[in-house]
Length: 458
Image (cartoon, helix red, strand yellow):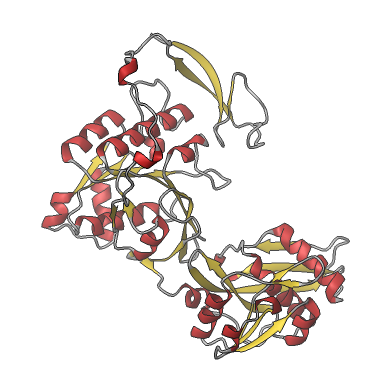
């Protein structure tokens, strides 16, 4: 028998300590440590494996490689983020704010899977089977003969019973909603504690690999937007998907923060309607809908997410400040980078903003990490400061250096093609990206090398 000991865990990041701490050394959060009992097993317990039966190292040339077996969900945006479909034997973590649409997306995925003769088990520790059925009816998922045979529902939170049901049904895809409600009888801690979440996820990982079943687990998020529970939870799974978006708005973004079977740069765009989630086939047009005409401080920039180029509207507002220290606010773009760009504009562009409040916003709730939007930020601020609108058919692309130079960006041809496809003929791009291929394009391209040239161009 093992012995018990008291251990303190951080609820935000899972940092482990032998005593209570006011501030977590891992995530620097305050008052997040909770006390839990952990059973320490003796080293002599358990079955001893003979040396002859233990696994041995193998040369890489003797290992046969094969393509991963994938199952298409027939939801194009989800397949894109997963890297081409669901990989059999994978463990996928889906996180997001409450009510953002995690369960809705997975239920719609189940509908498509059973129509392709895939056996699916939907396990919920929060809802009864009748509640899941009523939600499916509301989403327009009607149960036919195929649905009744291949879509199985289970309302339980015991991991042992869940594993036995997976064996009995020979499920190929398993949905666990949510991981914080599932518990193991071998541990005395309550469901949702760090120890339970880590143990249950470890069991699900073994189930996925041994039974070659794809397992999706839904995880609640903390106030910082990360999955609740230990940080090791994200290291254990094969893929981590996050649902983002403004609950008051209709759009949703699906991102892969980790993906062992594909790229982490892809995003999926959905629109929340009464009947569930709809795919957005043209995200650029979606993000630019409702753009004001002849309004100062509004520009269009082009960013690249994975293999997809997106046009988004960037807005800026400059007003006289009534405070001794002017305010700087940014939404959807890094605050510190905006402050740096404002300093470059003042020093290299000759525009004094020391007496103005500056607000920068990415319309539609999109979040930009691409430095190619730097030039768009400066031009939007300059447009608002001078109260002179930028031509509504102009797209601005470029990264800004501290010397005021405009640096080249990647995938410039793809960006220009996306802009011209939506009717934007005038483009302001870095001079270092100039090439014979771009000169042949049917577009009015202005090449600029510094901030002053860009101000003259607009």
